[in-house]
Amino acid sequence: MSRRRAKGRDIDGWLVLDKPIGMTSTEAVARVKRKFDAKKAGHAGTLDPLASGCLPVALGEATKTVSFVMDGRKVYEFTVRWGEQTETDDREGEIVARSEHRPSEAEIRALLPDFTGTLSQVPPRYSAVKIAGERAYDLAREGEEVTLEAREIIVHQLDLVACPDADHAVFHAECGKGTYVRALARDMAVELGTVAHIAELRRLVVGPFGEAEMTPLAALEDTEAPESFLRPVEAGLANLPALRIDGQAAMRLRQGQPAFLRGADAPLGGSAYTVAEGRLVALVDIVRGEMNPRRVFKL
Image 1 (cartoon, one colour):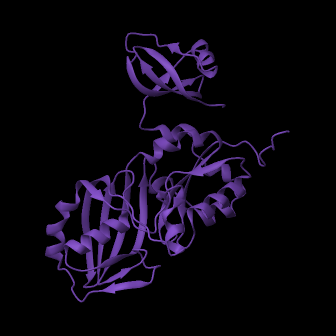
Image 2 (cartoon, one colour):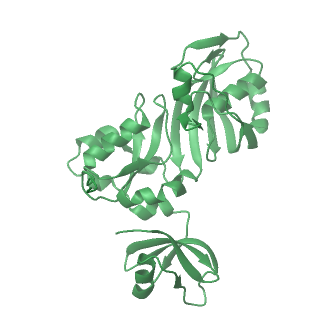
Image 3 (cartoon, rainbow, N blue to C red):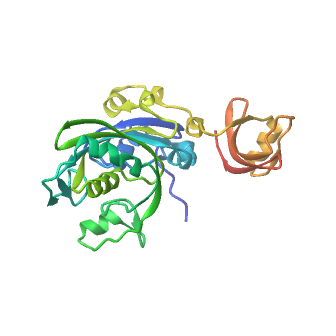
């Protein structure tokens, strides 16, 4: 039985999308894939429909570098609405609890150190976390009881930007993989003696990609030259060192075989990506000067 050939064309690189509000990440990736007529596409970190901002979309061989982008830092700006808790922890859900208490700016600032560093966080019931193979949000929407385990997260920085009125506070957060901003707002409210939900959320940075690289969806769909917005596959590997290798080493790596590094300055260990004659060759793990291919690129 023959294998069905993937539709579309071979195109490789990163498109750093400025996702608009009201669209799922899956829909956004589908729109990008359709614009490029690409065979393969994926994204580096889900954004809720309520959220806007940085959604890096990997095309073709760039999908092999997604994990490196997702493991990088993320920066958000978000607005918390005090006094109303929703079932989804954002403004899309129905209100399930209210509180008359509004924290003062001084109370909020005093709390911020407690929400910086390594924390234990229970993800929202409406999240993409899997339970026995099912997404938590699917189970929650079907009315099933959803119990999620706490997980360790890192919040590198959390700042109060403004308190425009008694009901709202604007924050800027830099955090690591797996952090849910909706849960952060929920838990801060509990400590401040009230309830809350996210009213607005914008992601500014994912790994090596930030606002300077973002392309609005409308600009992408209006252009006749979408390739002009593409960044190279290796842009997703900006946090790894690059190694220049010769043709013989490149041939061995492309065949899935190890190759030795040469030169007095060659690293003895760690991870890197290799380049030969200007072309990305492989992601490698280095052990005592020997490069072992982890992912090989067909570029």
